[in-house]
Image 1 (cartoon, helix red, strand yellow):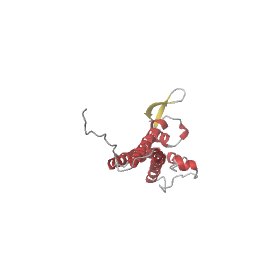
Image 2 (cartoon, rainbow, N blue to C red):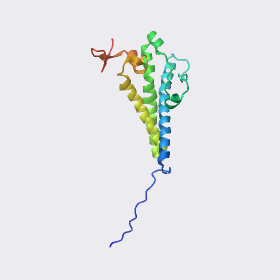
Image 3 (tube, rainbow, N blue to C red):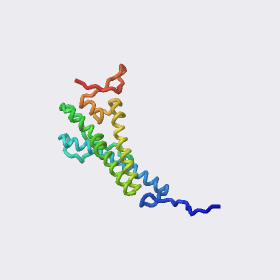
Image 4 (cartoon, rainbow, N blue to C red):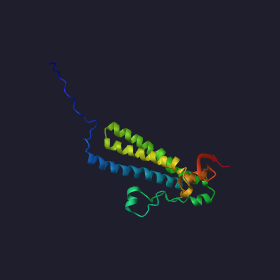
Length: 194
């Protein structure tokens, strides 16, 4: 029988943080999902608000409609919005400005701010071996991409019940209209109006 000095390799930690236990991981996951959604949500809403302020349609960029505080508002921010009324903007024939304000949430708040920040934060956390922070930045990235998917195509091809909000305001403000089938349903083809 041949004897070797081979020892079973010991499991190594890949970071300076201690190993996670499942209850702690699940607790952290829930908090991080909430925090990531809140960060991306507020960046989105403040982007609308600041764009309206920059274009002169709002006097205070921090004045969101914060909704009546309830558990639902606290947990998923339901009811909080940009507090920008697009009706007077359209009525004054500044539809393109209403479209810019409406698009600012997804374009500025998410595509230009939270998405790149999430990628940068994830890379830094991963390189530093901070798994908890890496996971947080991962969820910020997921929420940012989710918000972009929520706008295009989901809101783009819905009915106009969200009148003068977000993608419908973008469509109307820039003169984009969906081609409709004979029953009046939207199809996925856009054209520019004259």
